Length: 211
Image (cartoon, rainbow, N blue to C red; front, top):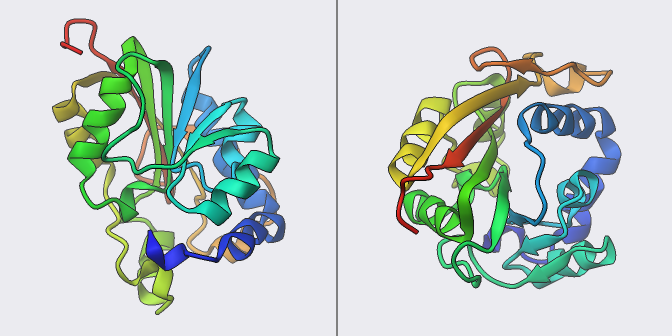
């Protein structure tokens, strides 16, 4: 994600300026996040979500982002989602938060998540629904960070997760306002999709799938 190079402080500051949005997104993730022992956040960024959720391992391609994540106690390894530098069956949870839209190869990245999970492990993908008002606003904003973003629908994410070997899906959503600037309090998440701009899909690695 070269568009974010050397912008770690700016990116991290967004969470300080929008605490209710961050807490709303966390609440939606927690709604479908299963209990876990050893978790990995793929594209950990500055470690905001991992630290808040108790995930101790993170993958991050950008050094300035990784440095901030490490300051939050995350064990960060440099790498990309399409080629995870971990052994098979290493984790029981893998998380991605708004990473899908910047991946070079989504099917390969999801297959890699499947590979590093134990049988029965969980893959949780949180993202901006391309049909939601916030993703549409970002695409129309003209900001360089989002001009090349490839947002996905819940159906597209589920299709790729299914192809990678995941099943047993659960869904959560939040950010229901058409304008994120109008969200003044932490929103209560809801199960399902179709109303919130921020969607979370949780799937299980099939017990019968080969590793």
